[in-house]
Picture 1 (spheres, rainbow, N blue to C red):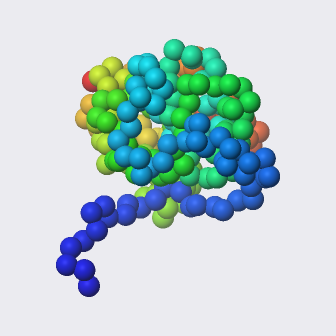
Picture 2: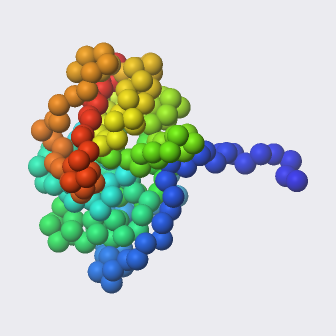
Length: 230
């Protein structure tokens, strides 16, 4: 038995790492374009000015899926730099291929757990906007503890977001939306822009996502929450 516990006890994960079948193009994109867009967790604390060669507001997207909507935002907001975090290789490969083809220069990607990225790589107060769209809802009650938006996680986000920075959430599961709202209303450092207990209108910067379209096709509504760091 070791004399000391490991430095970082493993938290409950909010995802199941599915291997998924990657296309040849996705594999090729990972091999060819990761050096241009990828940031390894082992690189430690991120210096955005050095990575991008400039200082612009940083937007962090956690769980970008296949990355199509994130790419649209990179195009639409060239005055910002974007950090995408995703654990599933097919989505990372897909976004790498599309970003390289589009000549995008305001995007970098972590293929890692967001909790590790926040802990090891993001400086306090560095992020201007965090966006988390359609995270895994873990619909069974016994699995709610695996949902990403928990009090400890929200408190950690508050450390990483600058004053007047934003946290934008969207889900097509009403039960999860209600939990998010309850957690954030109770959290220190955040104010609901739409008003206490209220959901937000979709902001102009968020394009529809694949998961949103699929949810709407199943008859789901969409609930959005927009909070400002105070």
